Length: 207
Image (tube, rainbow, N blue to C red; front, side, top):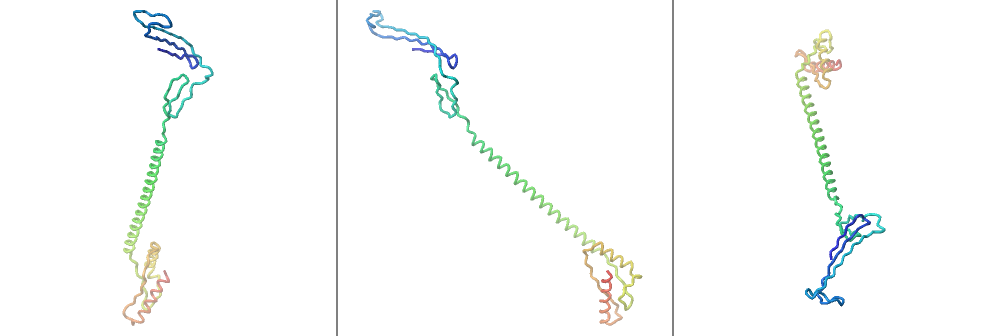
């Protein structure tokens, strides 16, 4: 047998079928055959039209990867939907790692910036303190003179020196000075020590 089917639409199809039957027999249904061939041949052919009733929609597409059997007897393979869950998970992990790397880089950059700023601040403070010390070391505080045997400050003879001392103290308020009183060697040791202390106290009180 040999058959041919053609589908015009989802509801209408036509078929053509033909065949040949060969039987080696001297008689077929009581009829003698050809004495030369001693065979019987029977041919058949059929033409038909098929109407598919009750079918309103094409066969649903299956997505589970198994063969989909159509109503016309044909088998079609529907490829399964791609499973990209692993790819999505890998992409999410990559993005997370990149975010962590950026955050770590920002933290390290901020820490370095703070460390550099602190280092610069300490260097500036050290340089400023050193310059201040050098400037103070270069200062010369003028002396204050007293009359012989007196601990009273006389502004008429010390006005310029007193003003210079006040200027230095105002310019360098953090500077500590040491005030000492002195006497000549004409007096006794006890008198000179007492007078020296009185002169130092007098200048301190004035300042």
